[in-house]
Length: 478
Image 1 (cartoon, one colour):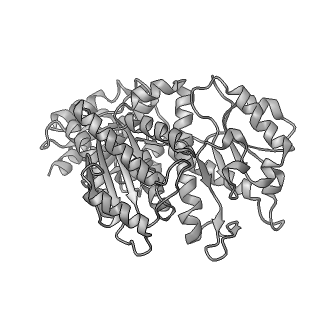
Image 2 (cartoon, helix red, strand yellow; image 1 turned 180 degrees about the vertical axis):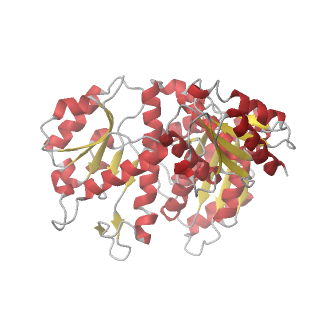
Image 3 (cartoon, rainbow, N blue to C red; image 1 turned 120 degrees about the vertical axis):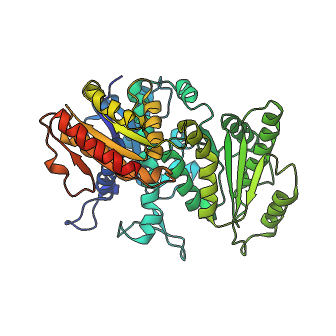
């Protein structure tokens, strides 16, 4: 089904009131930031619409929206119209195989205070808590250090989650199909104590940026029986689990005296033992914080068990080092096997020839010239699921030595988006420097708008541009 609206943001009117007439409201500001970030991630501007409780255009908007983002506050849950809108959207999307509602927490609410429909969904907490008083307050400066740690980090998480959901909806894929695409590419990032929530979010964001599905996707159940079932089910889909252990013991679900952190590790150890017997791929990384001075006796006992108990260590590598070092080890665990597959001959340099499908014929002489110069040519994928196409693009960005963007029948905006991708390439886990970047313009196309961008610009007729291309390739090979 095609949707007219990508994201519909619904909210209580009071939550968008500005403190002063010269300012914009919180929800309006949120929509502006989210729109900018989604545009950067997916390369095109999404259609985001605001819908307050008093907006009379109820049915059309709710019927034509791919995703609903409710801004949760006490005003929202006390508004009959907001709750009606939420219920209407759920009824319209009842047949959908994936989650299409993403709750944003503008203020802290307990699970019992939230609408029953939303209690099990992961929330994106966009509020600021005063550490000394414990009181919630709104950000007065969205670009402060406090906002960078909480507001923007959660906004990035939300952006990538929305992007993935929109890709699946636009492709018309069912949830079961998504699982098949990411066979052995899902990672279990265990829930942590409150002291490591920021670090967990950073790792989650990096994993998602590299194309992995991160589980769990929903809030874990409050009772130990259901929690155990859900954790086991999620872990069974994964080939790696990552556990971060700090000074906080973590929440204790009903029906047990062990924390969620402890239980997840126990279940992961059991899964590791089971998969070892059936020779299935599964590994575990456990990181223990170096700063444990505030740890309780119960947490210290749990950490001692992790270090000494062979059952708790099943299939695990346990590290107590700086978090950045741990993240580097995790990247190596995830990326090295993929890099080995991508590089058939480690001595052969590769060129990522970025072009559109419409220019497949026109780019052929250039591809042949690159191959004759002794390079392996990496090319974009044009067929298959959108998620797989994106994954190959990320793998190419991670592994090329030099990159060439081919401008044939495409416009300047398309080229700019590809230049932006090359700028972002170091963020995808590259382990080698980029040795050269160029844009080749076919025929009468010009490149005047791309000067002063640290790019080699190659234009002119085919004969002349091929000659200049050889010079560019020689510089990379030298």
